[in-house]
Image 1 (cartoon, rainbow, N blue to C red):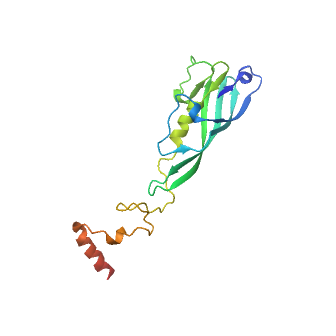
Image 2 (tube, one colour):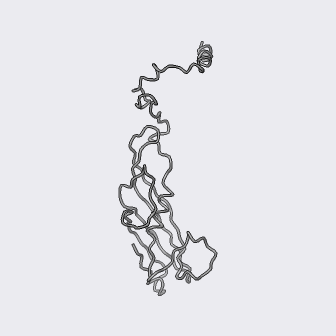
Image 3 (cartoon, rainbow, N blue to C red):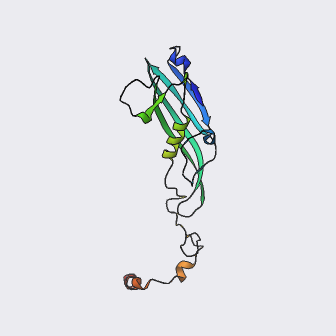
Length: 175
């Protein structure tokens, strides 16, 4: 979505508020999300752009809902992410302010389009590791069942002969 900044550029107002949603599938050339994460709706972006004598700062909050699976037991999970998003807005690319190019947005035809930046930042902010609970037992490597009591493989599994000495030691310690 292109955000119109003509009122700010013409000094008619010092601040412009915005609140919109971004459909990631409609943005061409946007960064992809990890394979195990799927957004359950649009990305919400709300914030403001402030003009301080030619220096414009965009400050926003980005939020989205997603679904994924637990990395230990493959149970389905849903999540919500919300994070701050900020950029410096420049009228022309010829100014030299020494800022990082990734943190800049340039005005084009009286507005800015930063949907790709929002999607890229969201893909970087998403959690890397997902757990249904901190003490998730995971899956049995033999039968694939959850290790919460429904698996009987643990009792029937043969002990590695190299570990027999340790098992005997543990048995002696229990006595």
